[in-house]
Length: 382
Image 1: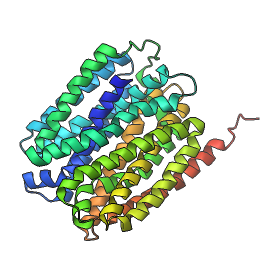
Image 2 (image 1 turned 90 degrees about the vertical axis):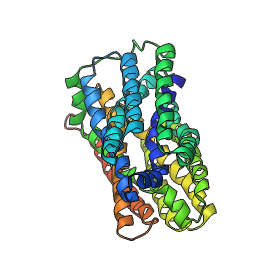
Image 3 (image 1 turned 30 degrees about the horizontal axis):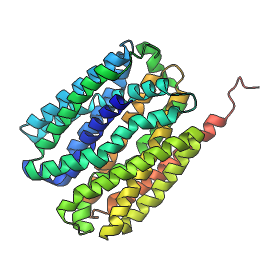
Image 4 (image 1 turned 180 degrees about the horizontal axis):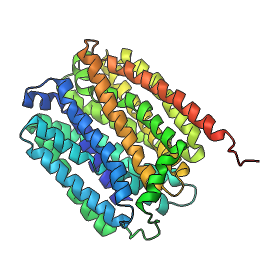
């Protein structure tokens, strides 16, 4: 479990450290910060493309071997980020780095659920996701500080070394996972024919975007709106990560007690918190508290969505679990893009939070429809 979570730690670090270093990347390549945000979107789109392709095409590959190969590819992608000579090649490298993300988390989540005691599947999934949350407390702030003081490329050097350590840990400590069912591409692609799978993915893709709309531009929001010094940004990122840890743990506990209720609770909390962040961002103390709460509400949603997808996917669980992270990274790309649009339109750095609240409201509405449809009797029901 620790080896699986270490992979999540590396993935979480590379996914979120770019947000904290956007001003540095923009300055290095002589572009605007909203334009630099395309690096965030490129990584997210890599996840979206890679998750279904890898999960389907590698359906017959033994699970342990697949996890090791995915982390090796992740490591190479981050090494390419370090060496990128232009912003265009950086965008390509970020896209490549994102390709293994969804498939890794999908397979790792299923592996955790397989190894978990009865009645504790969501907690086991949350344990894997905990690596991602811890990354936002340790990995992201640490790498951000390193990038700010020694150059943004050094942050990705750290990520590459985490990838190497994960490959070694998986090879040494992960069981063979021989109990996990090996399927085939056609079986896995069957997930795309299940309305409940598609609707649940859409809920994540829409509702989760609010967190990323805020987090993508968190560095400038804290300095230009809240009035914090640039040196305080890693501290805020750590608070965001602590919020993610708290939300991840709470979300796992709630999802084991009732998956649908946990999703509703997390998304309603996101609406309230994101709307409140528009005002909270104008004061250093309330802005820091708001960052913690935004992270908590977003992370609380993930275990419930992941568990629900495993419940409704039947024999296509690998693809469904991987697609969850594709959906969340559609939210990442959309949140970064929409946040950049309102900033570029001159509405200021608090506008992304308002956009996020609207996205969360849309997610609540869509999930309400999803649950109601799931409760409708099928034609064969007596």
